[in-house]
Length: 300
Image (cartoon, rainbow, N blue to C red; front, side, top):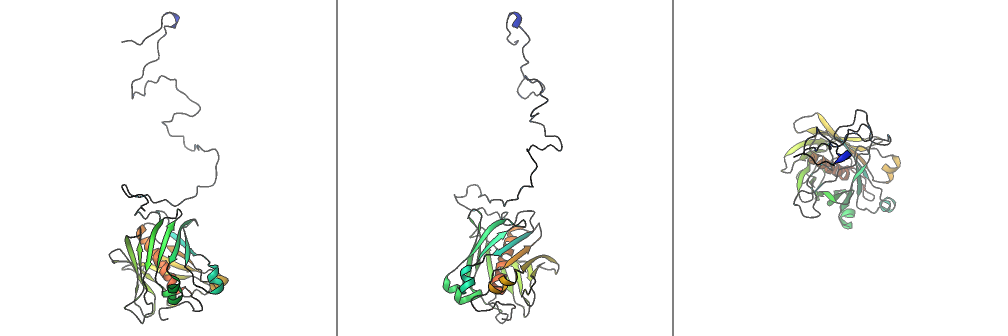
């Protein structure tokens, strides 16, 4: 059946009727200017933006709950802790004015940043006033780590334990959960007469990594490094560093700065456990309560 036409001078050949999926025939003439063919990639060097600005800022990805999860559920994925491509986390303890002026111990608070200096998490210690001021740096606590949308994504649990090498049966331990309620690993202090040593364990308490510190953990105008090593190797693969904060902060406050370095391809769950190890090290060796001096070795 031929296409309909009009009589007289208007009886011109009609536009060809293209079939569905046939790109060889188009009812419209080819257009060589303006926006171009949307099906073709732009030529090399073409920038669709209006101007050239600074490189985009890398923001932390937001974890998405699994399909079928109840409203408000937190995704079990740990990509938000240390996404692929980041091999360093910075932890800064906030200055508490009440604690600095009158020596009254308050809950420790921390800011966790990525290697670009962008804040990705807030961490806050949770316990009671009596525990903080009577048990000192050995106190038990729950630490909640929340993202920038105030959602809890990691929980760290520390029971009350001894820390001295004279009590090998009751050494320090810390549990890391992500999301809260799901244990992903432990940090366990290993007995040693001179050196602070820790085991980084998985959810079944299997040792995956080792963490070794110096005999005298005191940062006198310098950093204190705790070397991260493989389970059966002495070759360092990462590091937890207590960074020198300056003379005034070191003398008059107990606010600390830490850096955590790890391999790029490390399991993100182990990166979260290393954050727990950093907090444990801070409380064990760099926490001052009232007039008591901070610890510097496993002897005290």
